[in-house]
Every structure is written in C-alpha cells, then in structure tokens.
Image 1 (cartoon, rainbow over the protein chains, first blue to last red):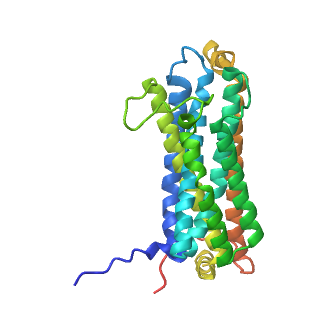
Image 2 (image 1 turned 135 degrees about the vertical axis):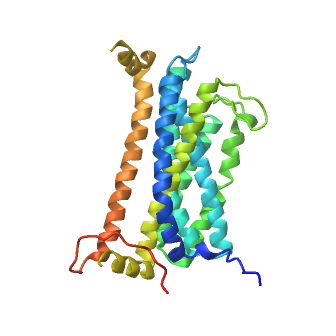
Image 3 (image 1 turned 180 degrees about the horizontal axis):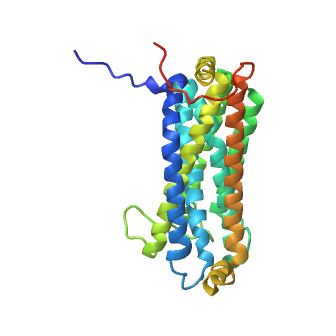
Amino acid sequence: MRRKINWFKYASPVSFYPLAGRMVPWCAAAAIILTVAGLYVGLFLAPPDYRQGDVYRIIFIHVPSAWMSMFIYAVMALYAVATLTLRTRLSSMMIEALAPTGALFTFIALWTGAFWGRPTWGAWWVWDARLTSELILLFIYFGYFALHGALGRDARADRASAVLVLVGVINLPIIYYSVVWWNTLHQGASVSLTSAPKMAYLMLTGMFLMSLAAWMYSITVSLVRVRCLIRQREPRVREREKAAWTQ
Amino acid sequence: MDAIVQFFEMGGYALYVWGAYGMTFALVGIEIAWLVWRSRRSRHQRVRGTEQRRPVRPQWRRQP
C-alpha cells in the first residue's frame, strides 16, 4: 500500500516552525563563511581594474544586493500567488518576513550604486532606466509595508497585500531588460548563462561568493523573522514554547 | 604597514569604497540587532508570569 505524500505538510505554520528553527544555524553559518570568503576574494585577491582602479570593488556589494533585491521580490510574488490561490497563512507570513530584507538590499543597491557612480560617471544619480526602475522597486516595497501595516493581519488584509505584491512584479522584467530596451548609462549584462563572461575570473568568483552569501543571509534572516511572526500569531506554538522553555 | 595603508586608501577611492561598504555593514548590523531584539521580545513575552525564568533548551517534539 503506497503512503500518500502530504505536499502541504509544511504549509502549516506549526509544522514549519521547528523546521525553520533547524535550518537557521546552518544557513547562518553558510552566510558567515561565504561572506568572509567573498570579501577575501573581492578585497584582497581580485586585482585592480585597469580603468577604474580599486573603486570597482564596490561591485562585490552592489551586484549581489541588486540581484537579491529582485530575487527576494520574485519569491514574495510566488508566495503572493500561494496566498491568493492556496489561501495558506504561512505564505503571507513569508511575504511579511522577506519584505524588510528585500527593501534593505534594494536600498543598498541604490546607495552603493551612487557611491560607484560618483567617481566613475561623475554623478551620484541619473534618471536612467535601470536606476529609476530600481528606485521604483524600493517604493513598491514601501507600498507593501504601508498597506500591510494599515490593514492589519486578517485573511483579507493578507490577500490585499498579496495583490499589491503581484501588481508590482511587472517591475522586475523592466529592471532586468532596461539596459537592453533603452539607451542607458548603466552598463549592460557582463554575466550571462549562455556565453562566456567578460570579466576577470577572480572578480567573477568574488561576485559569485558574495551573491551566495547574500542569499544565505536573506534565508537566515527571513526564517528567524517568520519564526517571530509564527510565535506572535499561532497560539499552539506559543503554548508549546512556553511549556518547553519553562520545564 | 605600507600594504595596510594602501588597502585602506583603495587607490584614492577610499571615500567611495568605504562609504559603500560601511553603509552596507551598518544596515545589515542594524537588521540583525533588530531581529535579535524582536526574537527575544517575542520569546520573553511567553515566559512572563511563570516562576522559572531560566530558559531550558527544549527538545522540540510533535504533540502525540
């Protein structure tokens, strides 16, 4: 007799809570190791750029944070689809857990970009397509915070916030293709899945390590945050924790 | 010593490189600190009102 797989086992906040707790230390350790390795490669091993000198090293923060700002939003959008179709409570909690880190990376991408643009382009800011659409992404994150904060925490509020997240997802391909569709100051893609990179090997390694580091960091922080949210909202988890911690 | 000074100068771009890295680590530090505070607060709200305050490492077990 074949046992049925329960695909939705971890869709329950109460089941997901201990799983998330077990994942946090591993993801945190990975984040720390990858950050140290990435910074070592980026700041010490990678050679200076022949044109930009050492200021290009901002790339090791700028590119990973820009990627994460978009990737986290894409994950939020997937959870938004789950919230609206499957109506799982945990999905909207995950959106709430991911959003602050996504907004943080968006701001970091904009800030580090400005600090890179000033010495290389001569301007802290230009209204070019990529910069502007990334700024709009930050505003969309703020819009999510505002809406979610204003509506409270019931199921309808979760669904409304999920709709906002989905509406904003159109911005992601705009950011990504902005350097192709428009005449932009921001450079085009140097890394592609299909062709050889136009970048020195060590620089690529540093970027890759820092991207993985940012990814593991985001996972760690989001899992800790969703555990806080689950603790706040699920009485069964609160009761169990209370019993476990006061033996 | 010279190499360390050169590292911090970043070829004359120290303001930009460390301005970028500095803000990043400051914000990440703030996020982590805020999360630790929030995590502790949501935990201690639970044990409030019970006699034993010293936390015991729980063995997470599913309810039978």
